[in-house]
Amino acid sequence: MKINDDLLNKLRDTILSRELLYSSNATRNSQYLRRKQTKEEEPYIRLPFFRDADRIIHSKAYSRYIDKTQVFFLVDNDHITHRVLHVQLVSKIARTIGRALRLNEDLIEAISLGHDIGHVPYGHFGENILSELCEENGIGRFQHNVQSIQFLDVIENCDLTLQVLDGILCHNGESHNKNLKPTGTISWESLQSKIEALKGKGKRDPFPVTIEGCVVRIADTIAYLGRDLQDAIEVNLILQDLNVIPKRCIELFEIKNWKEINWSVLDVLIKDVINNSYDKDSISFSEDVSISIKELYKFNMKNIYSNPKLIKESEKIRFMYITLFEHFMADLDKENKESLIYSDMKKLDWISSEYKKNATPPEIVRDYIAGMTDRYFEFVFNTITIPDRVKRRYT
Image 1: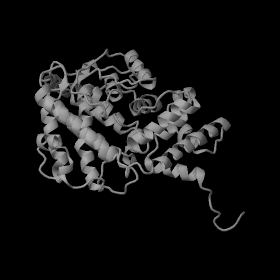
Image 2: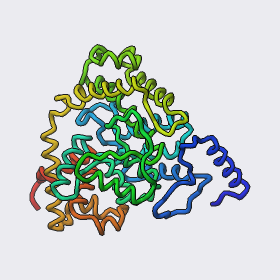
Image 3: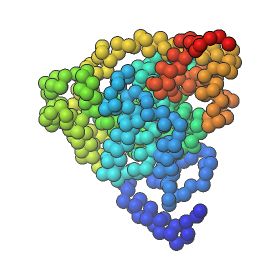
Image 4: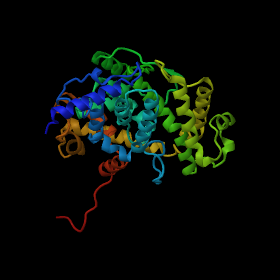
């Protein structure tokens, strides 16, 4: 069904009037770049970046967020953060900042929702193990932001805009930047060179090419910094005692009690970014806030992310990753069509035929494992390592 011409003209005028309120640094909807343009755009109903957010939400990879670890793996507690909640928090925070700075909220939302789709079972610990296996098999380092592009642009062929893909690729909430300024050129060649650099040797950390991408990158840090601390208290990883938190952070973030830790951190950081970025061509924290972010991250690293209680099962998880990778490499080599990697990966009709034709065995195994939820990862490991019991008698 088509919208009648009179209404279409009114919708067009509404969109154009909104863009007149944009900051001069904002990305205009008319600037979008799409590689294949598989469907005609509806620029006054579902704008290009708005449509990208829809495509991400309806992807198979997005649905697997539901059971992917954020920080606390192997913990039975429904009140802690999983990936599906984290990306919604990032989206909300980034859109709050973007609205105040008069930026393109549709672009911000799409980048936010897609930024962690490439995460693997058991979070960053699983990512490090899979990266080692990928390098051993000659396909370069594994990084979840590159894998997000692999899922959305290659495997499912969502035909997202370049600006969204670049923002997803260049997010890095673990790397603190006091100031972020859009960097580089908007081109498909530039995006590919960033991908290759991230997979290669040495530390690479490219910045987004749009200011909206910079907002999401900073919002990623804001979203987890206080929330991880609150979750750690929820699962009794650290004490409900404000005295254990650095005094500077308590004072600057105005933390009154442990229940309000996340709220206090969010409020201060969001307002600080807005204060320091309004009508500027970069996204920035103030000096005092930047120092406190580093101090709180250092505290979280020591007391949460490197806590012996959190990583005590790490060697078992490493063994599981190695077992799965070697097992499915062997299945592909033998062309074992009964293997799960055929029924649950290679034979799926929603996976791009171009991907199936061009992907190497190590890449297929990497993508299969990276796409697993924590629960499915455990199921597959049990399936390939524990023999089936005979129900009653041999027949």
